[in-house]
Amino acid sequence: DKGISGGVASRCTAAVTKNASTTFANVTGLTQTVVAGTYRFRAVLPSTVASGTGGIKYCFKYTTTVVSVLEATAKGFTATAVNVEHTTTTSDQANLYSEAAVVILVEIEGTMTITTGGTIDIQMAQDTSNASDTIALVGGTFHMSRIA
Image (cartoon, rainbow, N blue to C red; front, side):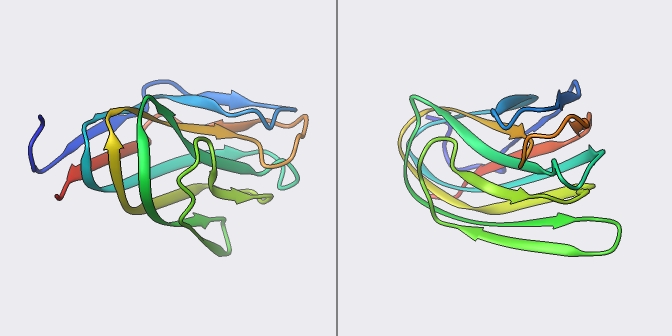
């Protein structure tokens, strides 16, 4: 048991590029191993989106992890605007953030209750299939703290 703690942070170690693909892929390095409990999480995800038509989307990929409660808010930043989205969906690969725009940074934070431990990966894809590159950049972070 990891116990209640200050948490663990992971960092994106290699850029992930998608083009002409809305299929999610792991963002390299943004993985957390969890046990049953309640967690607070925060992800800061810099990106380069060549075409607003392609945009970007993020989700959690659960491997053996079962989430019974999720409360998440995501903020996506472009050069001139902010888009805010909310979700409570606990399903594997459900969109946490999805926007057809030239997004330069996404912040996702919230809480989740895990009933079965495992791993959680952050995944990225294009919002809409487009031949221009959508890239999750090196330096993104994913932090989880067990709070109960």
